[in-house]
Length: 140
Ligand SMILES: [Zn+2]
Image (cartoon, rainbow, N blue to C red):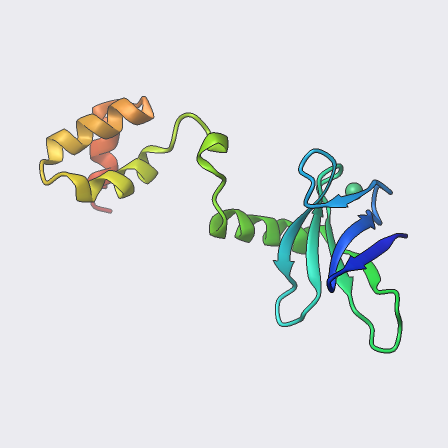
């Protein structure tokens, strides 16, 4: 298991799950930094090859830090959370946003509800009646 530190950050490591080894921060092949484990100073990385989560735990008095694969269930939740807090750059956003999202984004740009409905329906490629239901959900 390889971990190379430079400037107190990890620059190179080996995935404990798939054994892929690579540069941290290289999007083609390697590992993406994913911040820190909650309440710790353990950096977290995502293996681009197999998608698993990796936590690097610094150990006092030991030069080589421990590399742990994050439990897949826990990692799934962390990925979800990460995706919400770190939306993809515009180029990677799916071409058709959800109508709910568009309503949120466009609501403040117009006071004309019909205009809003028209904009959202067109952008999200849904029917105008579908947008109306989002704006005014049927009373339950
Ligand atoms: Zn991997």
